[in-house]
Picture 1 (cartoon, helix red, strand yellow):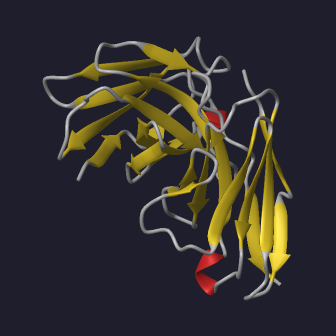
Picture 2: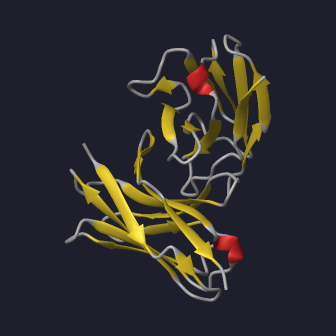
Length: 116
Length: 107
């Protein structure tokens, strides 16, 4: 059973770069896409982007200029970088596997706070 | 990008009520739609995929229907464990956007 474990810095200053990594346990990259989703406090889910094992990416156009998603197949990990963060980037960030049936499983979530 | 609109944003209901949530896509997505349930402090949980297929382990009181641009999630008899926020997500295009969410509250 595939499980995702994510980690990264939880407190950032404005203009810094958010960096999160998600490790895949109990499975491999296979043919799926692997995604990042975020959720501002008390708000809904926002799709950030996705990557496959070949490094092919799709990004939310509203974040595309600041987002980089990368993959390290040797470590069974994929990562998110979001540059020039502001308070509006505060929220819980999730990694997830994009199955043909939807997103399953999800990581545990990482709270990222941007504050000076 | 395809936009997903859910209604209502909040719904007050009682245990035993039949509840229906609507999700509309800005363009046709065939049946490439999933529904998730999220409780406070938890990651979303997949309930339904391909618009109407129940994920393994999800109670049969949940059902989904629709195609094209209009979809519904129905809970036939609301249970205490069902008070949560529900999201739709399209995966017809590379932009796998979510609806704004529907919070189901206790009446």
